[in-house]
Length: 406
Image 1: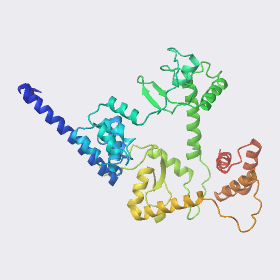
Image 2: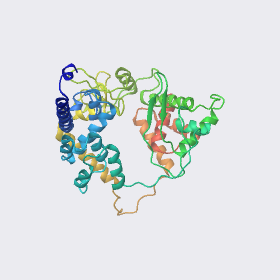
Image 3: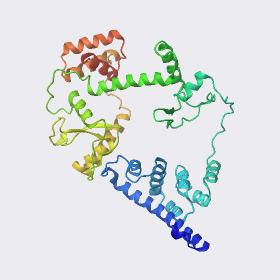
């Protein structure tokens, strides 16, 4: 700042023009580098599960800045000419981000030509002209909505929102906004069915939660959901008889799952060469450090949590790109074959067993092969039949395991 204070007005303007030009070239250069980094998937080596995570965690961009750069980097792989527009300053980064969802091989040249030199608002008007949307239904929104509706629409009691318009509208992305050090505004679009369930829960818990506060109701429901899912994944935590894993089985015993999740704190355990750990906590699976296919044991020491991105990265490291690509193609072919209509049978098929009986037989067979005694499995399924559990294999199996391992 001190150095600039002594320059002339003309030189200051010239320097600023040069700096802006350099900034535009640098922005295009950043996108070029992101494209190549994404192509090589190097973010995985740096303990990031995605290009977006790399932009936020390693490059220090804001969530909004990372989203824009990632989207422009991806679309520029299909239309490289957009980076020339960015470097020249003809279309700014936000403009390319707005255009990215609408560019096609047929319209890219004409749309870019019309977009040059326009502001964000002008680009929004351009896109509205090119891709018109249906009119919004006319509504009158009260400034202070009715209490019940306000609570249902804001989910946290913070802020206000009027009743939704009669015609359905596309669901907006859920938003979590901090209000203070200990409170948050949570906002999302709910279906009519969910609204009815919330009202039903409010009525059922009217004694426990007299105020009918939705935040309290939802917190109770989430606590219950977490407890159920934790029990399903890791058991109850009580010691139980250890069953020997059958040779060749990929099954990970519950006690191993629980120990691995506690040790890895429900977070991807991948660590890069500089000691940085992946921050991903979604889409986690328990994987073998020494691959199971190569004889790796299913022990706490040889298992860890990996996100889907780093699971694929490790598979490519161990088995090679060609092997993984072949397995992906085989899985896709099997999926397509299963989706195809079955061929006409050459002989009359035997009468199918009733769905309920078939489901109970399948689950009993699965429980026996998991190590339970046939008499135990039969008693558990008879109890579930009396309870009226849905006669479908997946929910029936989960319920049976819960009965057998309370």
